[in-house]
Length: 140
Image (tube, rainbow, N blue to C red; front, side, top):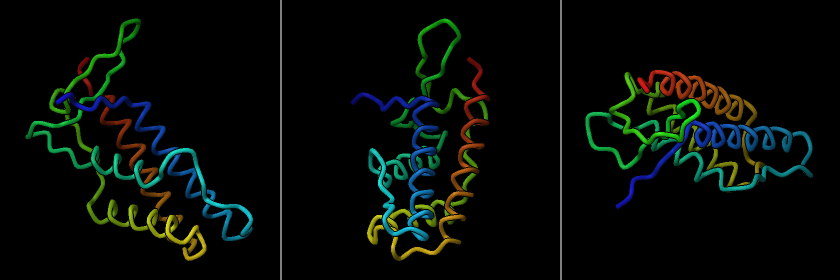
């Protein structure tokens, strides 16, 4: 079975799309004609982010990261090969993030509180910073 290859750009795209979805949910609270809809499935993006954040580098991972090497083709490496790979998100925050997205998706943004949206955006921001730090630690 071929391993899933994920680039830093993929992860950043998922985070930015999730943030855009949250932004639209926030706007929906003030203007019900705006709906939190994006290209792609925000729950799928969240699930992918959760999978990346829960990689155990001690075990064989079904995921490989694509590392850009200047003027060369990207190189696929396992999380073990990235020094200090760790995404610093507590399980509770990840769970809250997914619940917020499920709530927005199921209600179309009608049954969500502004503070939950803001909290989810803060979690996404932490994830964005953590992803950047993890990728920069690559020895390649």
